[in-house]
Image (tube, rainbow, N blue to C red; front, side, top):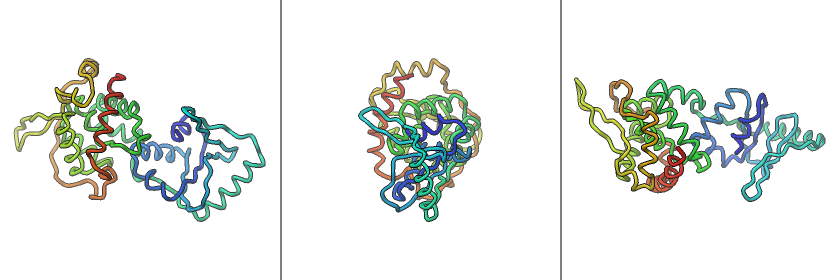
Length: 277
């Protein structure tokens, strides 16, 4: 909600202070972290973490402040016109910032990450990736699993696994090992399958495809067929040389928590996301 609100406000530089205990979530939760970096690089957002307690549910842009109001299904930011309160908040903000740490996640900005995906793979993979992320609202689930969404998006277009893994390593989304494990779980759950693609030299490559038994995870086959008719095919980008080296350390944020639990959430999200096509 906060990132969506800030994105909707043009030419405004917001400042937010969050508890230090939540700093790790901002750094690691995908795609929240990537969207946050996008706003930071545009000089539209600064985030600080502190141990000061309590902290208010407000945003400030130095011209005023916005209260976050939640009531039932309603979530809104309400701008205050109280100049005296705004001045006091700015003063306290400056005081807290002297001991607060500034946060900037170590990941590419959202637009650049998507641009790299399109260059490395295909425009249709990028479109499907964006659509599933938006429909599933992954950031609201506490960084469910950007890797699984990437794999499923690539499977919609019949992309070579190695091309997808190379992109993920280049943008520091996940390591080869992490992708391999997640792909295996998705195969075991009946979400995707692979087929071998012969090469002139070396072992065959793997092409990602949606499973013919996708209904097992609650996704209707006719809905997936719509996506295929809209342009997704088994064509794929040119293959690249394979590498078993990992692009990230084994301390991977996407490996937190049991993979099986993530897949249960993913199955429900896929049902809703793909059926909106």
